[in-house]
Image 1: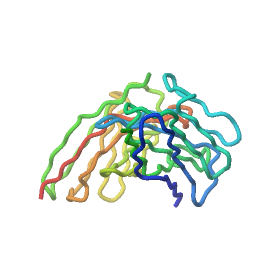
Image 2: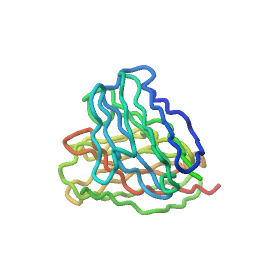
Image 3: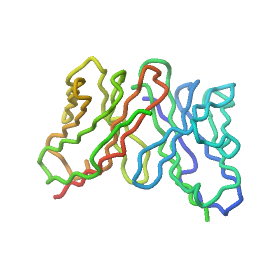
Image 4: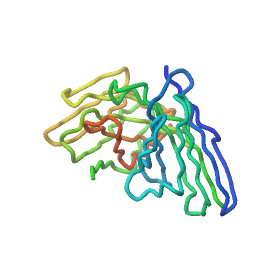
Length: 117
Length: 111
């Protein structure tokens, strides 16, 4: 089945630095990938939709200059948290779809636990 | 925006059935899903149901959908300790690209 690999699984960084998270579709091409954020004991909130070869679409309230998304190829999307602050500490999950075949075509990565100290 | 609600906790004994409930507000949902999340891990799609269906069964899992009441449930038969996790219901609406998740139900299975 479709596999989405997310890296790193955990990262600790200092305030003010930037962190890049990668999301790769391993055995399929994903024209669209999605980035979610999950706060402790809360649900996942869609941050942005990443489209290959074009600019990402951000959800309301998500700072596009802070969360930079690059979807340079059909198998890779990256999320860069710039000038990270402790409040950016969260669990970030990406997902990808194999196509417009319905929601069951979505596959989620295993997530990245970001801790900003 | 769309509102998907779940109870936060459920505790059952091993071997019993578990029923996790979910309510949603948007009647134009296209698909409804159940995902499982184990500690520190991503989401695993358990099952999904198309909005014109009332029931779907897949091995130990039974999904019931009541469109009139906008109520979705997941029944796990013969619950095992390995089923302990957080279960999220989610809906996608017209545009499959957006998922709206509930807050998750933490299932605790006691041996």
